[in-house]
Length: 306
Image 1 (cartoon, one colour):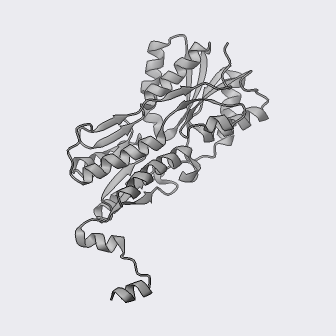
Image 2 (image 1 turned 90 degrees about the vertical axis):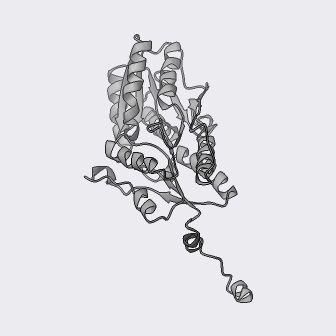
Image 3 (image 1 turned 180 degrees about the horizontal axis):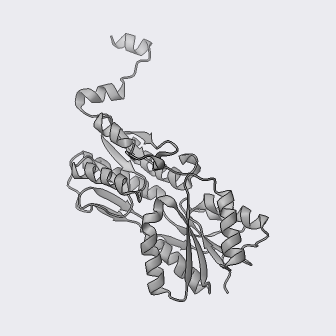
């Protein structure tokens, strides 16, 4: 039997073997609906690197789960991962982000309540379960404050629709702590190509309203923003300053001009999420159910002092 297995280069099917032991050795990684491919995002890639490094060391494999286009338009927004959990195809689940949609949060709260091993990345929503949080509201407020200290008073903030649930807290903190600043938050639709709507936004809020600074969410958005500004003959930072979010350290260094950034350590967050999940699956007692990461400001060439 052993000789035949070696001759045919047979390897045990991990899923079938897991059924016998009531485990699959598979961890689901769920990405909410986003713009384009999930591999277009530096945040997603860095997160996956951290997750994969930890899981492979612990002899677990990843199953990438996403949603088809138009998912947000359906009446019943049942996340794809729920079917995998019902079929017992996963030992645990990592959610790469939280949606502002109440129905989707209810699904997450349900499986957390039932104590299925889950780690989600985002602000804590349930006393049970585990989460990793990069303090999204705090670092966006800190970015506004950084630009305020450089003399900027009209600031444009570009937020992806999936993060709309964080926006009220951000605007409330800015209004309370920095009354001299006028913040213009713009939600970007995940289903749209970015260039056309961003062109309209730049024309209205920079050329029209007179915003002197922009906060985009990541390197991908920043690249498009720089291209749009160049096309509209809006020089950076002479006419408008840019302070971006950076998930891959050094990404802003490669752009022209070199982009000042708020660095959020997505790779470390992914590693921590996977480590927490494995410990939960093994039944270990974990006192710290929530891990928060702080961002780091990296000054470069894209902010002008007014």
